[in-house]
Image 1 (cartoon, rainbow, N blue to C red):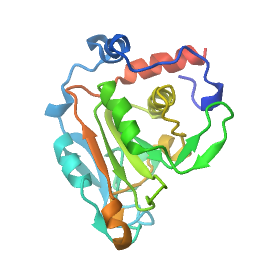
Image 2: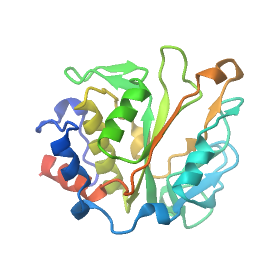
Image 3: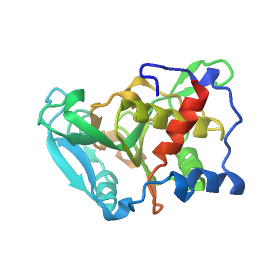
Length: 239
């Protein structure tokens, strides 16, 4: 990958990838997967018990089902609170150089995009539609609505387990997922936080006036996200 290269959804030009019986196997074939069954290995993440102004991290190793249990029920209160970072820390201070790798890919469901014009629209597509596309593609994931989620105003996080060894692999994986959703009529826009290596991601929290609006989705396959496929695709689009 060529570090620093960026491109918008509106400039992607390749055959649309739609989730069908014929596209599913190329997406999830054994030749593009890691050999370790990730359900038998802990995710290696980092965690902070305070808000993002506190950059002190601790190692957070847990199995995928345990992560699901940690995010499927929100705490009631203000937005600011504990957070996780996508990978293992080598020192206990949050900065890019201290994150050894990423074990989850995270999409910030913040905005939608008009894929014809590139116009950004505040509020993300329906998370149930994101769930539908990812599950049809056999991609393990979890989705939980964030503190700003409200009636008619979707805000959420999408978490996909998959080992990225560097920022370039993360970039390719994020773009691959965004394109998959866009090409299946889910116009989720990408944002800079998706690519930030040591980005803090809030654990689920909800205002007491909106606690009944919290939504959680999950689907578990027996294999992680195909990072290698995403990298190959990205390089084909950026010769």
